[in-house]
Length: 246
Image 1 (cartoon, rainbow, N blue to C red):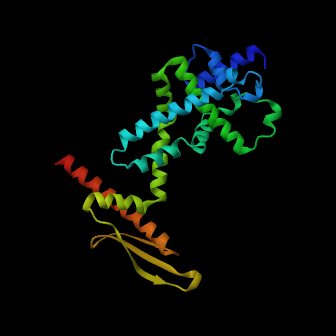
Image 2 (tube, one colour):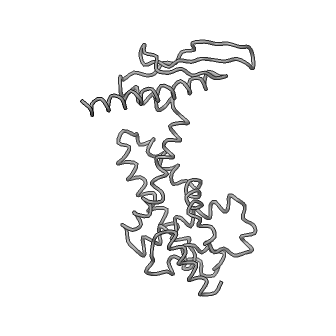
Image 3 (tube, helix red, strand yellow):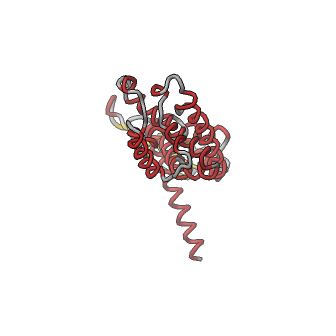
């Protein structure tokens, strides 16, 4: 790629990122894999910018989680932060930004990359870009970029975790409401052997909150907890609307 092509490429990337660099060499470095510059990798590849960007992203994500999830425990905050800054999530963000076509990799190395390697590359470059923005534009610009590109994933990841573990979420809700634990009870069992079906109810004290039906008690309990959460959310929304119109 000649210098004109490189310049045009960086212009397109700046438009994609919605960031205009004062020092475009930093942006070029942020998308350059060390295979392109083995002798000068420390100064010309994204490795050290990635290191910086990783720390910046983590700091902003941790602060956001702390401010928006005041009732979460340290363990819950740690789990959410770890998932948000994971290779998988950052790679998906890098792919959604279409970063891969802008990454400079030695062609011989590129031929050895599988899908997982390409995903990891997108995650690395996303972190390096954050580091480059921080150096070139300052803390506020880097934070704005993180807010725009990464923060939307926090609630998506959190919602996915809640959907995957509704029993844990329901337990927290009921503990806050009544300082008791939800109770699960098998209400009905039908069928035989592999065709067996269970109906499980979940209770807050003696109040039935939800019912789930599945081929295992565990899954039926999970579905019951999910129904209970949905029911409680609807009641809370109705109560909030009543207070507003009163």
